[in-house]
Amino acid sequence: ALPGGFPLGYLRRALSRDSHSVTERLVGDSYQAAVRVPGGPARLRLELAPDCIQAEISSGTGLDAHTLAVGLIGLDQNAGAFSRLAHELGFARLVREREELRLAQTPSVYDAILWSIIGQQINFPFACLLKRRLVERTGTPVADGLFAPPTPAAVAALAPADLLPLQFSRQKADYVINVSRLIAEGQLDLEALRKVSATRAERTLLALRGLGPWSVNYILMRALGDPDCVPLGDTGVTRGLQALLKLEERPDVDATRRLMTMFAPYRSLATTHLWQFQQPPPT
Image 1 (tube, rainbow, N blue to C red):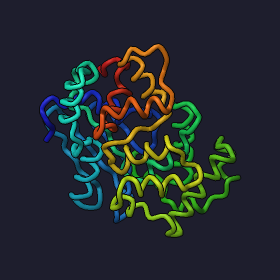
Image 2: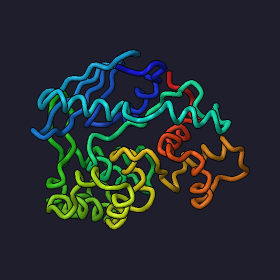
Image 3: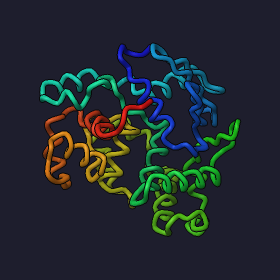
Image 4: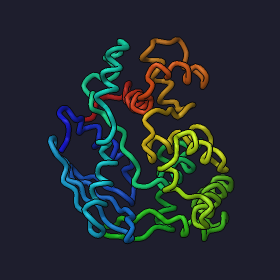
């Protein structure tokens, strides 16, 4: 069941950002995603409606389907509390007509790590292309042209030279393969990150080659559900702050960190709203 006023159009937008994805697809109000559950690859289906979302999964359990659906919808996030805070701060326009906006979570921590590395310092369409090529090379076909995302072991088995023909830079290929090997060899336990403090998870991720502050905060927000972090250096955040606060210039990293403190302990939702602040409403 969805809360009253849930902005379904924004969920549709989030679920269809990558129109060329081979891991997920949204057609009308029917969403399909190839995912991995403890039993192996599976196909998740969501039927979207204003008051509720029906979820089913081709294998695994009802709990698997429920957990994935709740994450994609962001139902465990306190959107109401953030909206009240925005009003108290005098920023009602930041949340207007989307008070129940949530941040869609990635199906797994590994998915977020791959995307945070792949997407660094390149534009969004090219990042989507690289991700698709990696998935087609190392993922698992499920059904209807969808591929389950690769396992760490599948990517760890590659050499950087294998990714160069896919237009990965040598450095990006090295980062993706190195972190995959750490996970596959048991040196990095991604599920353990869910059980430790945000500070410890942040330190663990920052120690990995290829992950900087933006990448780590993205992973904390999108995969680990940290409600109070900011992907510092993110242009969507700085542009949103500039427009919201009517600043002459976009804030730098230090200024962003300082300005975002007013939204604590809901800085992740503040980030989500800032990303949408200057975007046209979804149709």
